[in-house]
Structure formats: C-alpha cells, structure tokens
Length: 468
Image 1 (tube, one colour):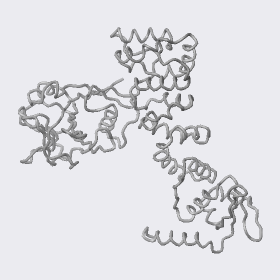
Image 2 (cartoon, rainbow, N blue to C red):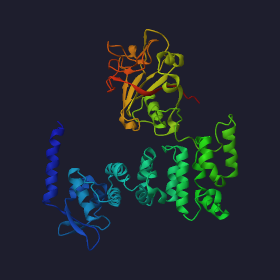
Image 3 (cartoon, helix red, strand yellow):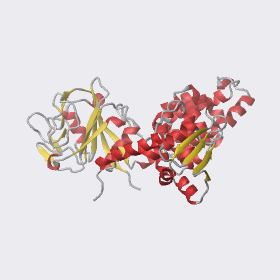
Image 4 (cartoon, rainbow, N blue to C red):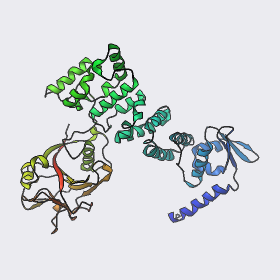
C-alpha cells in the first residue's frame, strides 16, 4: 500500500531537520570566491538523489575526498544561492527573495548547471511575472547576453507583448538595444496598435540621435541619413496596412523621407485603391480587427478561444479564425427591441456585448443560431454567456456554457436578446422592452451577472468563420 499524502509534511519536516542539524554529513562545498567563500555542509546521498550534476559527480568520482569527506569547490555559485539550493534539495523549499534581478539570473545559471529543469521553469515564470516589471530593459539586456536563456528571452518578450506598458511606458525604453527592440517588433503577438508602435519607434530613434532636430521638416541631408540608418531594419516590421489613412497623414507622412520609395507607392495604392487589400510583403496583422466602442482586439482572441472551446485565450491574431462584423450598436441604432430584431433577426451566429452603466464590467452571450421567431426557445448546445468584471483585464472573465440546451436562447419580438429560460423573474440574461437589462441564473451557470442593470452601450457582432 502506498503512503498517503497526509504523511508527506512529517517526512519533509524530518528532512528539513536533517538539513538544519547536518548530522552525519559527508560533504563540504566551498561556495563563492575568496576571500568571501563559505563552507557549506551537506549529505552527498541527498544531493545525488536530487541533481543529475551531483549524481554524475559522485558516480564518476569527480569529487575530491579527504578524511572521509567529499570536497566540492564552487566559486561560480555564491554562498547565498548555494544555501538556498541545498535547502531545496532537502525539503523542496526555495526562497526567491532576492534584492535584485541579477541574483535571480545567477540562481538560474546554477540551477541549469545542476540539472534541475523543472525548478528552472518555475524560477523563469516567477522572474517574468515579478522581476521583469521592475527593470525590463536592464533585465532584457542581461538575458539576451546569455545564449542559454533562449526560453527566458521568449517568455520575457511574450510577457511584454501581452502587457506592453511594462516596457513602453517606462523612460528606460529609450535605452533598449536595437537588436532587442528588433526581436520585439518582429513578433506577431505584440498587443499595441500599429500607430503606437510607430510612434514609439520614432521616439526611440530620436533618443539614439539626440542631436537630430525634432522637427523632421527641418532635417538636413545628414540628419535624414542618420535617422534612416537608425530605423532601416525596423521599417519591414511595421504593418503599415494596419495604420489608418488618417493616422498615416498625421503621424507618419512627416517622416516619409525615411521610407523606401517603393513602399511609399504601395502604401498610397493601399489607401486609394479599394481593390488593394494588403501591402505587398507586409507582415500579417498583430491585432484582429474589430469595430467596437466597448471591446478591444484582445477580447476578439478571447471570444475566438471560447468558440473553439480552448482553455487558454489565443495569443496571436493569426490564430483567430473568425471575423466579428458589427451588426448593431445601441448608441447609433437604438436600444429598443424592434431595432434589435430588425438588425439581428436574419443573422446566423452572433455575439452580444453590453457595458454596464458606470462600471468597467461587460456582459454578453453567444447565440450560434438566428434571433427570428416569436415566443419560442431554441436548442443551441454551443451557446454561452460571459462576464468580465473589468473589460480592460481579460483575466477577470467568467464563462458560462449552457446547461439546459433546449432553452439556450429565446426569441420574443417585444424583448431584445434573451439567453436561457424564463424563471418568473428573468432569463439568464435579457434586455427588457424599456432597454434595461436583468439576469437570473437558470439554464446557464451563475457567473455573477448583476440582477438588474442599465448599460452605457451594447453591440451585436455577426460571427463569421474564416475559410481558406
């Protein structure tokens, strides 16, 4: 019979006591460089069990042995880090309280040397979620100098792509090395509008050349050449087709001397000729397109992941295989049930999104069918409702997939969108004849939608599956 997990705390406590007392230890590790090296005692059998490095060392007799004690010299590992790792070997506890990010990097180097891949993954996740926000540029410089940190490099860039303010809202962004910035702007998952990326690139270019006139119309030929050389490698990374003509005229055209002639011609064609759908050679969009005053492109990726029943939201625009075409906006088309049915009844598959008045909360639902009919319920197993406590943070999202599928949606000409069964008080989510909204869990899980509320606005999008 296997030992039950309830005994594990006592077993770990015993190993922790052995770590503290060092009874019958047979190993001395000299950690750190002289004159600050520290003697650390341990049991070779413990380290051999926990680390492939030490297993090989003791198996092949690497370690010096003197007076019955194994001797290890590790000048490249500080005493503080070595003590933390030794404690981890005994009881699985690791103190990640460091004064600066460099010490975490040193810990990662030691963990990699000792052959602890699972621990390395944990430290990298901690590092990205905590240390990166403090000094993103300084940390990126360190990890890009070490070729062994390719995983950490990617995790860090991925984190910045998901939360661009970590880097772009800091003054230190202007000091980021060009090769790191190039790696960042080459990614398809950077959650910034393309015009914001362009604006930041120009700010960075000026910071690298502080003597260049801030007014591009006053540049000399030498200044044009300097700025052109500075951003030459970045121009192919800008998705100009995702910059509107208005944005181009107000923010980009004044720097047109930095753009290749061929590219300027292609951009002009794109803006002036409706038949031109994309700029030749342009990279794919970073953000899915959405015409909305309530939701952002990151919500599109979230909705698409729900439609595909994924656990995690999509990270790249290219992964989204749906288009969300605006059918109705309350502030434009009206908040009455007739306006809703006139616009939405014929449309197959739609998502309703409503922003609760005076809050950051949005609610809504997906109907894979149409809204036509009167006094009927429709069976829709793929239907769902949702709620975000803060529409600016998709991590606050809650999803409720339909439980009683035969009452997934209801169609009544005197009401707006109705999700779920009428329980005598409300449907799971409903728009009333007067334009107010209400909710009472019944056919869907309780995802904490307010009982009664008004909305600042609401929108309905037709969901279109993209086919090759």
